[in-house]
Length: 461
Ligand code: GLY
Ligand code: MN
Image 1 (cartoon, rainbow, N blue to C red):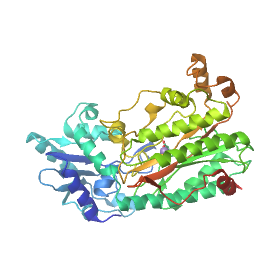
Image 2: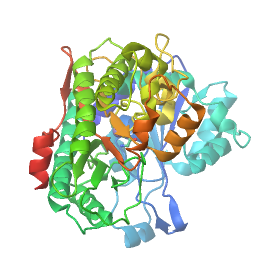
Image 3: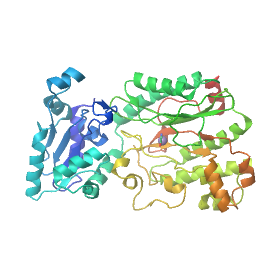
Image 4: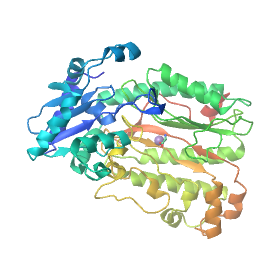
């Protein structure tokens, strides 16, 4: 837990970017799975964690921009709450932890907001991403159903993005802690993987290590031999000799900070000749794009560096052809690399995307492309020192996409469809690192997790 002065300082900093009114930050509530008392694991809203550090369901943080005070609204835990869920911090303790000036019962929030609105004061809130929060906001602010989505404050969202984009040293230290656990997840998974095991056995091992690390997974683990399904969350397949496993998983710390790593490794312990070719193509794309990251240089450039390297390698293999620059400009590589190079990471694995993907990832200089592949790039603008990003190129053979493009003869000048047909059963490869942007370029975060062909084979043997 960070000290109260950290949260006070962050709120003070936020207020410098806002003119007047009230900031209303709703925390998350419990979310039922199949009946009210059987809930998904509780996850606090990240903006509330950032400005308040308070990790309990059912809280609201209200920051008065004009007098600079912060009030936590919530309910005191009842004896019944304690009976079923154990001791939990009361409002006074939450006030201390967050450095807030005041606390009040949740029942007083409605009146406080109504009073402020009657005085002509503006209530600023962020775009709600949960239906329950939308309903709460609409009730509290007298909005019609659905209006909370339209009336959120872009001024507030932009101010929060500016502040949370640059990670403090204490936040980087938390991400490093997450990556220590993630490192252990990969060591164990690579060692345990062998012919005859089921994906679920390895996925269970990975999730167990995340929980043992003191937090949990930052997002549902991807552990699959169908690596061409970009976000495959099914684990029922048996691993066979010749299969490649794509594992995309990251631990989150107790304070909620994420990590997000991907590795691809051979079930039998050694890559086949074809697997080596594609693996090396992805690894070269990763290394070149990492080398290209610079403060002030649009991350979109790094995406295109990866695309160019991939295209070059796939030309060597005979899958692509034609002029390299024209091929990259046309986006032909997106048949094999249809997603973006990476995204921001922090308290959220895709940091702050609830505030608006384009507010986080684009600006007046760099607008999102409409081209297939490049338009999936979630972060295209120039980073600054302290930004934490993922870098995660991949190469996939996706049957339905190949069929569609081949029928349309799309980018025929650059894609050798006859050869692509010979690779349809290949699957996919993705390799992902987490970086912090520095004054000199970037630094890979966390302990090294095997990624060269030799190191991966070593770890799997
Ligand atoms: N790790 C999943 C993703 O980046 O979308
Ligand atoms: Mn990622």
